[in-house]
Length: 344
Image (cartoon, rainbow, N blue to C red; front, side, top):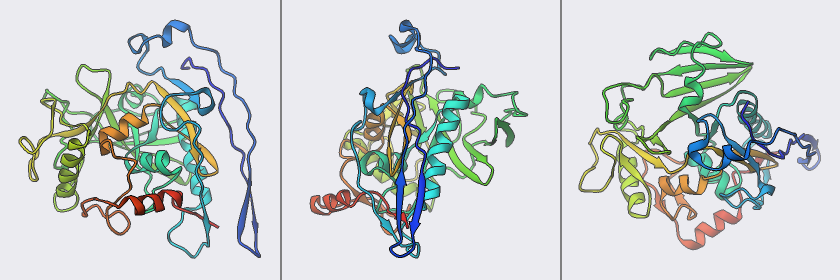
């Protein structure tokens, strides 16, 4: 097991519906989980840590990162509304991530718009569809090779860990700016897309890979011609002008109009200047969820230094629509309204 120390909140949710007014009453109970403290030397520097060893902190412990003590308002709306998220989906998502992490040492965590929604709003983005973008640390699944019937061979692979079923898929050929090739080599990563399920609940993630000889990682900028390639190219260039960190991963050059344009098929990824050794528990509606302690850094790399400003990609977050920055007044209005509401 990973050595780490934490006081983790375990939320036990009791949901009662009052038929007359359609409200939910939710109570939580916090119970400490005791774990052996790590050797002091193992947390002194990133270099001394095993790649699979992480440090887990609760928000109360003052972990670095996004607004540790922040609380977010959220609303309930009638079930007839399509613009809400089911309470059970929130519970399942939180528990799913927690169990993979604590029981199986798999760092499976929110990325992209999902991470942005959690940090900035306390839940799913209010102005886009419910989309739980997830990432999984490449090495955490690679070490499972040969376990639970999982034989990683560069083809679609199925296996299990505990009560989770896992399916690994190689990089699909339709991506424009991601070919599944290890930067600077001709070798291919054996998997990119990961589907993990437990009973009737499933989540899809994409691997985050170690970056060159740094202690960091990168997210491939996977996109498709005629779908989101053009908009992602324009957005990535704009974010880089605002402090983002999208790179041509084979040559380690930050992208700019001089070396990258719409139609280019070079491999692109956002560089994450973090070793992903620290995760923290933050508010997620009426429960909590685990995210990297360096989420601020990750969001800056992906969305530039202005990621706290709300943007709009059209109705439901259309992937073909270039993002537009909203006015300060409209941005503040959306921020004040909280995350996507919960279905009552």
